[in-house]
Length: 547
Image 1 (tube, rainbow, N blue to C red):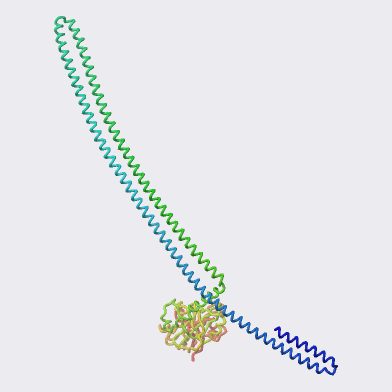
Image 2: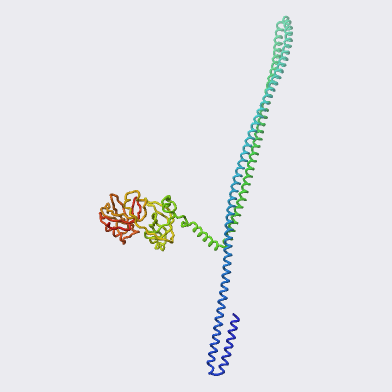
């Protein structure tokens, strides 16, 4: 660009110099001046055009380079997005697996610890119970043995004491007897002496004898009493010894029993304490494991959150776009239009409330309303009544007779009418088909008539019958001319109820007006779609007087 401007500057200088030279030559040189000006102007114009062309070429090259760079960046970003999406999916799967593993490990640890604690507590309780039972049994046995031994020792001591007391008593009694015998012998000697003396001096001897007897008796009484006191003291001493021995044995047995019970209780308390400590240790270990697992889960969740945050922060917009694309792909994959198309026989055989997909040709439509339309469709094998199919207002205008569509919905039944509900559709390019009315007059009143359901049919030579009120027809709406029309016609004693569906053929149509002109007894031909409502109830599209 700098060179171009230099050229222009040079040309301008030449132009100025030329003008100066020419101007010095006078007015006769005006033509030459104009020629020079034109030449310079042409030169400047060419330079300008060349500069613009060069600038445009440079701009195009720069634009192409920028576009190539943008495409490369886009390709690189798409590759990174794909890579990051894959990594995110892998991270989520790994995190999910890790969380599930951690949760399972946690549950297993809790269950194991709980089982271990229950087993330990059960074992400790059984051990403590057994130890207590053994200690009580041992204490009881020991106490019984001690009591038995003490009782036997006390009995032996009592017997020995009684024997000793008896021996002492016998000895004392013998000594007392010997003393009494000695006293008696002495008394007898004294009595003999006193008797002799009494013979000498009866009064003095009698008195002395009485005193001697009294003194002897007192001495004997004293001796006997002393012996009795000794015997009583010996018996009391023996009794006290026995009681003391029994008391000592009982106290010893009781003490040994208390000691044994205390020991058993202490052992049981120790066992219970050990069990409690074991349970507490198990609980702490369990809590530790739970805390560790919770920490692991928190770490995994943190890693997931960080990874997700990083990915979202890096390629948030692109991921959303990719997700939307994936959703659209999934929708495309799941679209009912990809489902296998049924034949009419398959459709007839399908269970009620099952999903169905059919292809057929539009024959007629009721009025579109609020995103829905009801379609009468047919092919060479049979017909379909498609109720409230989802449809835009724009597409509804394209559903002209003969148009081929693919429909997906659910096979339903209402009051005998088999129809497709909750339907969606797409247009199918290709051939067209317009059904010709099928004469089913001969099937009136027969079971075979229902096999022609929803097809375009005709009834010929029927006689109009009176309604309940005697009229040839009735309006569904009592006010009239704002809803369906009903009439009946028969042949050979078989009657058919017909309906002019207001949303199919309204009040301004020829058929609506024709029915309004019927009289009871008129013989007519009727054309319509073989709708079913608790029996045949064709939706009429044509009524003419029979030929």
